[in-house]
Amino acid sequence: MCVEVFDFQLTADAGGDDSVTTEFEIKGRVVRVELYTADTVANNATIKGYEAGALTAVGARHDFLAYTKTPAAALSAEILPTIQRTDIAGVAVAAEYAPPIVGGKLTLAIAGFTPDTGIQIRVYVES
Image (cartoon, rainbow, N blue to C red):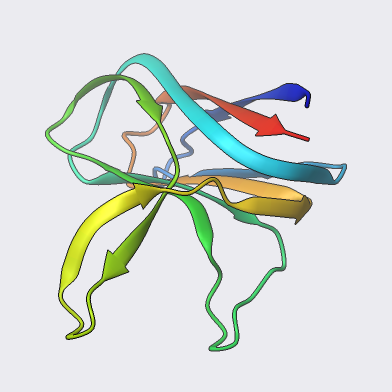
C-alpha cells in the first residue's frame, strides 16, 4: 500500500468562501486530513471535502470532510474520517473511524471565513 499526500491552499474571498477541485482523479481511501492556518478562523466557519459530482441515492453528496470551527481561533487539526452510526432505534452512537473510498476528482470548500483568511488542507489517500 502507498499513501499519497495532496496539498491544497484556499483563501477566503470577500464573501468568506473559496473552493478548489483537483484537475486529476484521486483513487483510494482518505485516511487522514490535516488543517493548518495561522489566521483566526471565524466561529462556525465550515470546511468540506467531497468527491466532485458524486451524489448519493437521495441526491446529496457524501462529504469525507465536514468540519465546523468553533470557537473562533487559529486552526491546526488532524481529522480522521468517521461515519456516524445509529442503533436499531435510530439513536446516534459513537462515530467510528471509517476511511471513505474516493475515485474521482476531489473538491475542497470553505465557507463563513473572514475574508483573506488562508488555510492549507492536506489530504492523505491510501491506494
